[in-house]
Structures are given as C-alpha cells and as structure tokens.
Image (tube, rainbow, N blue to C red; front, side, top):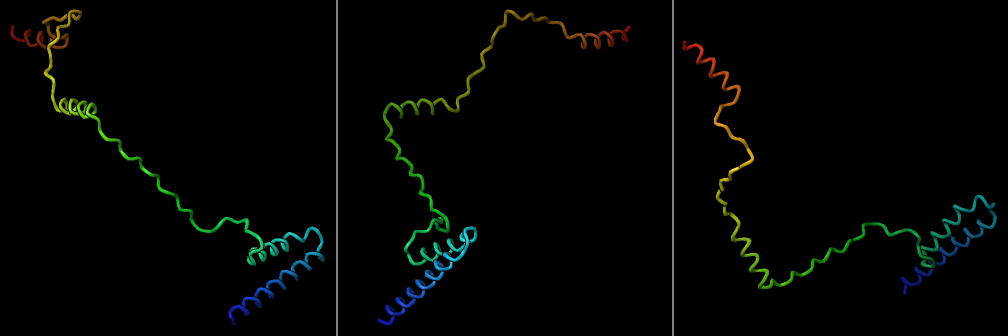
Length: 124
C-alpha cells in the first residue's frame, strides 16, 4: 500500500513538472520553444505517455546464418568421387614426341663453335 501511494505521489510531481513546462511554453516566444518542447517530450516518454523516437541503446544481436543441411550423397556422385580419387596421385609417363616442323642439327651452337675453334687453333 505504501509503495502504491509513493508511486502516485511521484506521478503527481512529474505531472506538475510537465504542467510547469507547458506553462513556460506558452509564455516563451516562437524561436525559444524548441528546447522546452524537447523537455516536454522527454517527460512524456518518462511517464509512458509517448514513445521515444530515439533508438534503444546497446548492440543489436544479429541472428546467425542457419546453414542448410547437406543433401545425402547419391550413388552416382559417390562413384564419380571414387573415380576422381583414384586418379589423384598418379603420374603420367612422359611420352616422347617427334617434332617434324623443328629443324634439329647435330651442330653445336655458335658460341660453342668459337670456343672449340680457339682450342683447336692452339694445337697447331
């Protein structure tokens, strides 16, 4: 009972302060009303007569992305995976290829020719 009476007294006091602000608003000129209107709105929010335009403080919790359940493997996909796994790790033997369009000579390169000629010239 005492708690209810104190709450009613507080509400009356708050109502009195709201009334005082409204009376002040009437007396003030147009350009000075903005801060008083803000105080009135704040008081109404405290009383629960008006919802606040401000966003609630704190962080919004994001819902985690729900992962879709994996589909069961079909026999075809399992067989194809086995084939792929069977080929992994195998090294193909290099196959010799004969290039017919490339002219291959048994002669050494020009630089090597000069070196060989210089060595031969010292022999005589």
